[in-house]
Image (cartoon, rainbow over all chains, first blue to last red; front, side):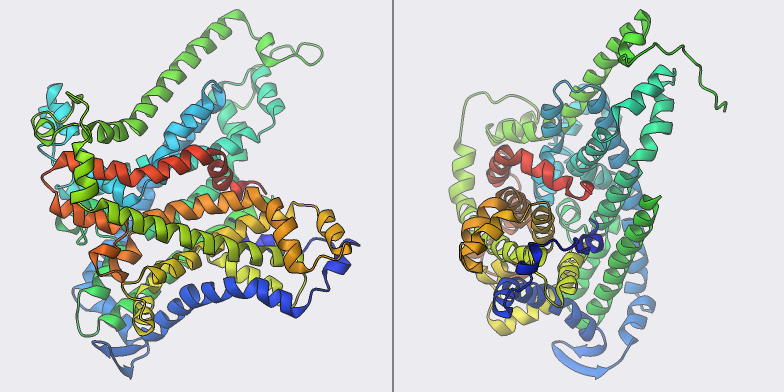
Length: 316
Length: 299
């Protein structure tokens, strides 16, 4: 996750001099295929979206140049002027909730595994198993498990006498977002667990032993010795969580449909973009492109800023 | 909070911490580890339980599931699977997904390997810029270009085409693959290449017979990490495919969930079928997955 740093050129060795004289033909034939694919299907569409956003559209007919007109429009005119802040708010809550729940539990599991290496590999595998499942399928699995009448979860709650706890989990506006956070955490917890695990394994044993010999309590050992050394891992996980939480689409679609659940309680920016782009409206192209650019700047800008701050920290 | 730690006389020489502890502490640590084991197994149940419920549900007749949502199958019955595979055309979706995924992974990993090798080993003007361009893709939310992709595909006749999807997926996998392979190449000594060059091998030959075999661990990581998201992707086919006989598993599943909403047993069976290839990948490549997840940590 440290792309720009990857670019540092290693000091030239003697053998390198010969390798430096590669003909332009070879360079082109090795780099061009990747460059063409990447440019045509990733870079060009994003640049085009920016371009589209500067014009008014009538269906698929490109109209006059309006500059930031579309941006002003989507931020001030109902319904988008209400939907955008709501969706953004849900994304933010989703991110905060995920950091608090998924990453804390992930750290807890990593610490448990660090202290009890017995069966470590087995547990790591079990915990990160949901990692590979499509978020859409995860959503469908949980919507079946959580369904009000025939779902196993409510069935089990009733069976042990907790009838009052049996709820339409995905049907209540207040519950939908917390359930989304939990289901999402269930899927991705393996990530923070493995990253924290790798970081814990990198802490010199001597430090921990010295602390133990000095009579430091486990809590104190954690906060004074381990936690400071885990900060780089926290950074990586924060960036990954941020990107994941602001790109979410499939899981919400499976749990709540394209409107984002009851009363739009789970509506997120990704869904909103999809609806704006493909649900008609004569200026749909202009508006959705402007929205795409706002989301793009938000995600790319914040991830870049997060990375910069974290990297500066690491130097100290 | 006091900052002074209780000092215990240090034993002379290098002794493991455990040995220095009084017996009471050791008993407590045993208790601790039993507690930890309990917690670990409890979370294992949370992680694996839902999957188990789906697996068991797929073996039970629908009427039984509706009567008692939790329970063991009364007999071994695969009729849910045959119904999902044939009647619900999961077989079609499955083959489409497999074709699209394999083709795009192969394309992505081969072009990325070539570019990553050139970027890691050769010096040429614009190299740093090109590498930065590829790697910035790690943070770019590519899906926001969906609408332009849609119109571009329309003009190229790639709407409702599996080839379009293959190209799109291959492109979106390039940043991570280049990142992983380039990182790996940097850690590899260049002596073998030099030897091959001195023996007169040209660059193409050198790449195929010397570099590719050396790169295998990195190629495996890139393959696994490209396979899962491609197999799982829902967003692009939702918009870019039209006809049911071209659907990949995820879009197919949305249709399937609409058609078979009341037939839980069949739904569970369909979900299990959709999970099989990833389970296989997971079983074969746990090592590569751990390596990939922690790729950012190695520096």
